Image 1 (cartoon, rainbow, N blue to C red):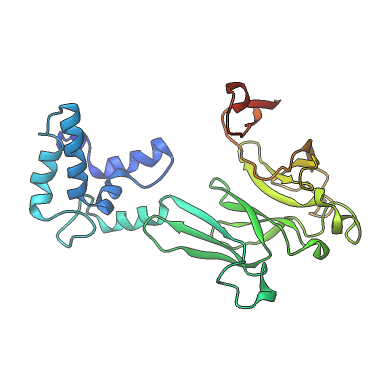
Image 2 (cartoon, one colour; image 1 turned 180 degrees about the horizontal axis):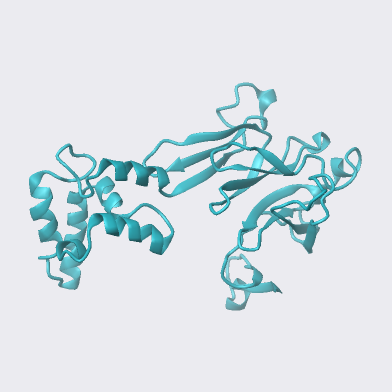
Length: 291
């Protein structure tokens, strides 16, 4: 508010700088409009009182120029902080989005025999109802997105061991261009090995956009220490396809039920944390692998 009150910068510039600097979420001006200028001023009153701040260029300026005129945000027809409607629409459509998996075992299953076959992927954006992107998936599990490539990636647990229908899938962020990366029945003899071998069940997935790789876990039987982590490139080598690609690497084996997986862009280590009632500092961040 001090930046606006002193005229150092305008609303349009602040809204452009925010996503450029922080790479995340809607701008503060848009957020203030959605929350309401009057509750924002009330919150600021507490900060002013606790920190003994000057109110002239914060809450006083906000009340004088907006609240007293009835311009209290999106809930008011008299106006808001960030006025241009076209910018509001653009920010709403480009704001922070959450991608959700529905495994297909809830109220959306009309008959019990369809349990697990009505999985779906949804996207929810700020202050907007969720949108269905992909339907009729067989028990989707882990999901991750790549904003840079405009695609999302997920694993399917499949229906049961006898159906050989576990896979790793990909689609554009709007749900189009659906394609398999690791097709159903891949890794082992389709008719015999995959049917009962839990070490071949794909569970979690994540991506490394900088290296152009995607990773997935194959968890193995419960409490058996046979979990594994694999990786492969985004692009399949020339002359190969999803059934015979040669770039699949197993990077870890003998893991305790490997499930979820996450890539962090900072650092070159794979870590794990020990979870118990009482933690020792040395157990919290244990390096498993260093590049």
